[in-house]
Amino acid sequence: MFFCYKNSFKEGEDMSIGVIFGKFYPIHLGHIHFIQEISSMVDKLYVVVCTDALRDEKLFLESSMNNHLSNELRINFVSDSFNYQENIEILHLEEDGIASYPDGWQSWSDRVKELFKSKDIYFDTVFCNELQDVDNYYKCFNDIKNLNVLTLDLERQEFNVSATKIRNNPFQYWEYIPLRERSFFSIKIGIFSNDKTKTRFFMEKLSNYYNSYAYDYEEFLTNNIAINSIAGATKIIFFSLTKYILEENERTQENDEIQRKQRVFDLTINLDEIKCDERKMYEELILKINMRFGNKVCQVKVKMSQKMSNISTD
Image (cartoon, rainbow, N blue to C red):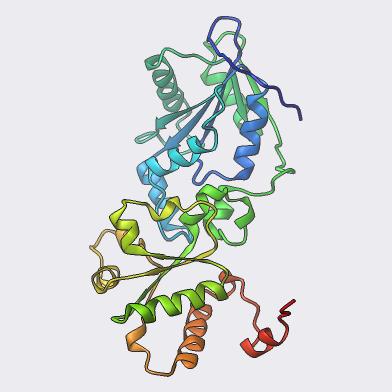
């Protein structure tokens, strides 16, 4: 592994131009590490985010993700990882209508050439970590003089993770999800009561118990802040809701399969429907959350009294 600093780029004939293609659904630390390393091996690196509406919707529906990663959000997540590295540039390739991998190589390579020609750029090096793709790259880009196809970390020894693993179990691979991306995968719980003081009281208690964040969702709406923009989010986030938002989230969605699966909140709780004293309600809420999400919230299964007895006040 080696790193070098490159600045003041001006494309010319003597420059080495690299390209890497990926769905990045989602981008993870393995991708980022790979891109960082190969960016020091060329003068300029193009990271191409490949999207296909039908394929990506299928990936979402077959995953345990609660929300579909839109093209815009996915590109933003990739771009945000390399904002200040001048020799790395993000491009978007629309693969709609091309036969699914591993078929469709010729149509796909034609689409790639169109993209690069439209931007008046070129490349002479392709990076990948799939050995079976090397011959296809050479075959499909045989008109590129002195093309190099380089493979790195074929066994994923440095980062034994994949986007598929994260899609299927994001919490198991939480440490591989970039901080700026984690709020997309966080469990989002909305809490409502006609008594706002009551809502704030239990939100604070629950966020302390789960070592998580708590927000007023209306503030997000008023300030046009996306939930997915909470930097370094914890695995679970609490939001106070109005009655209108509560009802909107619970309402049956239209017949579109994507829309039916997606929800702003993974769980909504109406405190006014829980009829018990304060202490019992607190225990009921913890039980409700733990039963719904199990080990996703990583809670130690001990009684609150036992926990309290082990806390030092030093």
